[in-house]
Structure formats: structure tokens, C-alpha cells
Image (cartoon, rainbow, N blue to C red):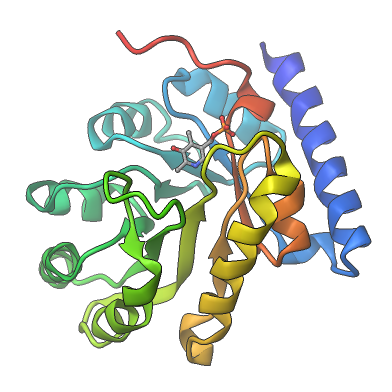
Length: 230
Ligand SMILES: *Cc1c(COP(=O)(O)O)cnc(C)c1O
């Protein structure tokens, strides 16, 4: 497993560099987040040994177990990339460095309160719904700016930018217009809130980099197919 993960990391980093070069950007501008959901802690360990430091998890409970198994690793940073219920805000604040899925004020307020209790500042991204479908996560594009202003005003949150997922497209090029709209929303933010543009997954990260992503969230292309949920 370890050898395969190292090879995958090299190949993904190469693809990031090529995509960045094509867009006239430096690969150093782009953070690779390894999405380890439903993969074992040992997969994270292998990626860490190959130099990956940022990891994304979708479920608070799963992240808690994995973190406990990886306490000896130095410099790990954890991103919550799955939806969060406000009643899990306390646990989320204790486990994650960045919550990428803030999509409503009530959740932001709960996170800020817990961060204050923990005497820490939590980095957050506002998740934008690029699908136009009300059943999907994320704030509507038209409400993004207002939510960002409210989140940025909370005492213990540091709003770093935006996160989004393109709707399932037939090919990665189809995702580009969605990423492009997210970049437009991002560019309208004040400088201190315009540091991280999280978009692009295994199937579409090159298109996302072409549209300005500064952080890509990659699971399958690093760790292989996810085992089914049990
Ligand atoms: C699972 C997931 C990813 C990674 O998806 P892959 O296609 O396996 O790279 C990225 N972002 C979010 C929000 C996810 O839930």
C-alpha cells in the first residue's frame, strides 16, 4: 500500500505542476489536501511519510479515531470537508485546524463560541453551493457575500476563503464554468478573507487549478477507491 501511495502522490504532484504551469502559476501556490475518509490511519501515515501534511476528513467521529492513531506524527493539519451539525461544533473545534464547510451563520456562531472556550482561533472557509440544487450543501451563490461578512465579524473565526464542489459533469472541462463562478465570488472578498480557494477533486483538479484553485482536495487519486461505508 505504502509504495502505491507514494507513487500516486508523485504522480498527482506532477499533474498539479503541469496544470499550474499551463495556467502560468507556480505549483507552490497550490496546497494538496489528501482526503483520507474511509481509508485507514495507516494510509495517512504513508502519505505523511511521503511529505503530505494536510488531510481532509468528512466525519468528525472518524477523524477522532484516526487522529488518536496518528498522535506521533508531527505537523499534521486536519481539514473538515464534510457537513457539520452545530451540536458537533465542540468536537470539530478540538479536532480540526480548518473547517471548510461553513454554510450558515448558526454553524459559524457555534464554532466561534467553542473556539472561544478553547482559547483558539479556528480557520474556516465558507462552502458555496455551485449546483443550484437546494438539496446540496453550501450557501447559495447569491448569499455568499453576506454570509462571508457575518462570518468574518465573529470573534474567534478566521475566514480564509471559499470552498466548492462542481456538480458531477461528464468531463472535467464541464466543471470549469462552475469553478470560474466560485473564483469570481472569491475575488470579491476583502484581502484578509481571500487566501484559500478550495476547489478540485480527483476528477477535476486540473480544471480547478486552471481557474485559480489554491487548495485541491484529492482522495481517490492518492489513496485509491474508497472501501464501502460499513
Ligand atoms: C470525498 C471528497 C473529496 C475527494 O474526492 P475524490 O474524488 O476521491 O478525490 C473532496 N472533497 C470533498 C468535499 C469530498 O467529500
